[in-house]
Amino acid sequence: MSTSSLWKGAVAGLVGGLAGAWVKSKVEPPLQRVAEDLFPPTHAEKERPGADVSGHPDRMPPSKLAQAVTEDTLSRDEKLAAQERIHYGFGAGSGVAYGVLAEATPVGAFFGIPAALALWIGTHGTTRPALGLQADPDELPVSAHVWELGSHLVFGLTVDVVRRAVRAALPGS
Picture 1 (cartoon, one colour):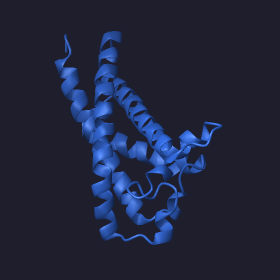
Picture 2 (cartoon, one colour):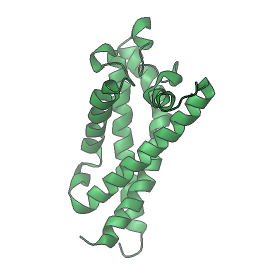
Picture 3 (tube, rainbow, N blue to C red):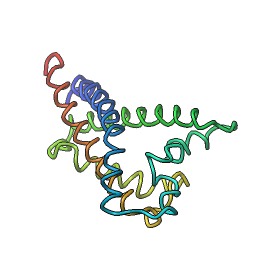
Picture 4 (cartoon, rainbow, N blue to C red):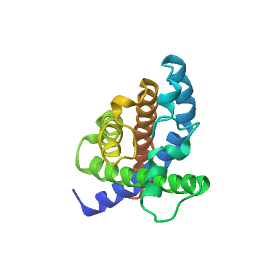
């Protein structure tokens, strides 16, 4: 494996990660509506951190993280702006990691789906609750798990499809 191909994988993954983060942000609200129609949450469940991206975006984990790392009290608008930067930064970083791994391993064999599942488990299932950024998984409504998992799978698929296209378009590919 050459350093050149790892760099190309990183670049392709970066573009894929940004595209995936954008697509994920667009599919979450409609996925939330569908999931809540299928598995209606209670009012109390929707009030929990991480349970309601449409109604309480300022209570989502990236907003809570932004507030946790500053000494100032952030306004709702400041939390949402920080949340967007965190969302795209995390998407870009995840895409770079995936792009590099795809150069060196068969991780791309299933079009990003296993990687997206691992990312969902590693964030929503463990890290975010452990850091107090989201309610524990057993406290969230089923609908929140459904739309979050769905949006992560869409993210992973988008990252892989875009990464493949960018990688193929790079010189010497």
